[in-house]
Amino acid sequence: MSSTTDDRSGLMRKVSVVTTLIDAIREFSKGHRGSGLVLLVAAALSSRIPGIGTAASLLLRAYRRLR
Image (tube, rainbow, N blue to C red; front, side, top):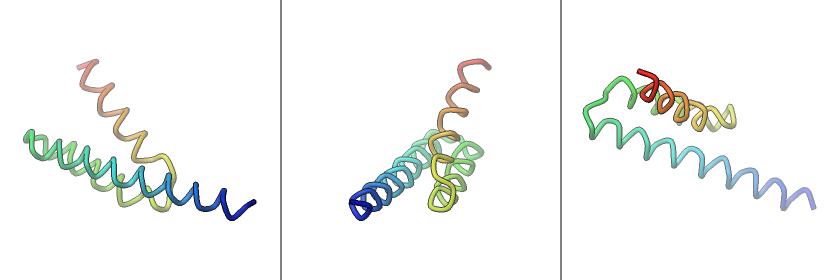
């Protein structure tokens, strides 16, 4: 049973990294180098710290709305 849980956890971690990388690429394409760099670093850290990529994406979006 724990093997299935580990597989799902690993899959979710990989999905988080990939989606954060996609967000970073989108930011770079819009000319937002700072945001792209933050998301790129968050994607790199996502493999070690689960959820940091998602948190970075959400915080950047919230920052833009409140600006």
